[in-house]
Image (cartoon, rainbow, N blue to C red; front, side, top):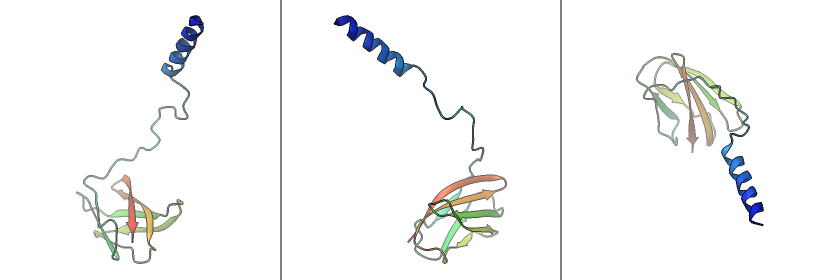
Length: 110
């Protein structure tokens, strides 16, 4: 009986310590980098405007997606102010691209 427990424990330890199969192969699929000192405020939004700032004052491409992944709005900002008055209350994903660098953030509109 002790032999069986020893064999079962040995097999269990072996299974948990061996690297298993994975759906990823270690490659980096998303090669985007963050925008330096990106700030989005106010968040959650209760008015019609969101301010998006970063260290660089370069134009930003803003893409807004709903939670289902549908692109709702795409604009190019030359200033820091984004008008969101046409969006309904809810949760959105912002994709911000500036100087070839992209990042995503969650935006809540009340």
